Picture 1 (cartoon, rainbow, N blue to C red):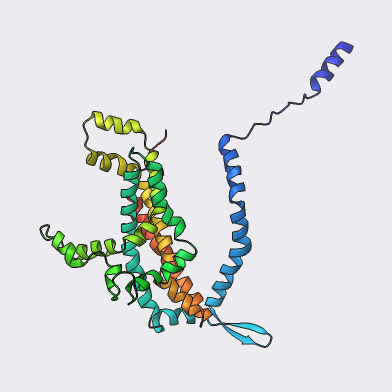
Picture 2 (cartoon, one colour):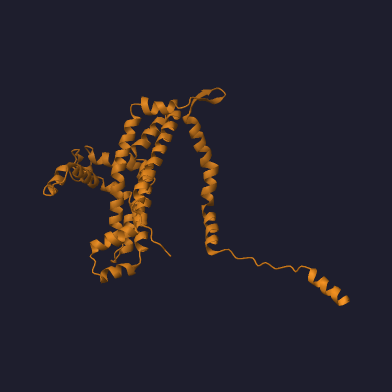
Length: 324
């Protein structure tokens, strides 16, 4: 009887199961490490930038009256936006000029950076040195050099009477070729005047294009180096030409990088100091801060819309390689 009771007592007591803690996966640990890296930006964004963005939005819907007790804001609704779009004689025209510059910048920078990335991806002597040389303008065109370029001090000194070009004040210093030269080159190809003017503008602005293509070139280089050499070897075995290999293999494989570079170029073109709209808004800020805030938000909304359009157009031909 006692043995039966002891057996019941031992069976009725639940035994504790020891749970082993599962170690976090490699992806989760990488995600945590990534958050530590971006934490300074996240804190700075919410502590510094969010209050500034909120104040700018408030000012765009208000007018500020400076009294003896400090500035006082008065809500005026969309009056500043309406004045910027329909009453200001220069803002709308400046926006159109900025759009024209963007239509020229994006294809020129992407084509040049892709061309240089394909060349620098080839096996050659001094390849690392050439890559560094083409990225140097990205580092140099900051700070003092960016200020000099944005104010066109170099160009003015070269075109002045005492310039180093000819001493007579010629505009040839800022113009490499003319539309007549390009027309003579394309006269046997039956090319329209629109393409002639575009090529002329691209050649004459080659300095600015090279300065703004360094980051895009590195992104394209990273995409080209991620393509497996076995794919190119199989193309050579099948007898594919270099032209066919580029359009059938290289271009589809780096199409995601084209989307990234297109978005990056749009943002970079709209926010650079040499942008005409940015200069106009900065000049307006010196006299009418509330109006400049409204112009900034109009400009920001336009940038977001253009980025969405560019991303939608580029996504139509983007090829994503499956890893499974």
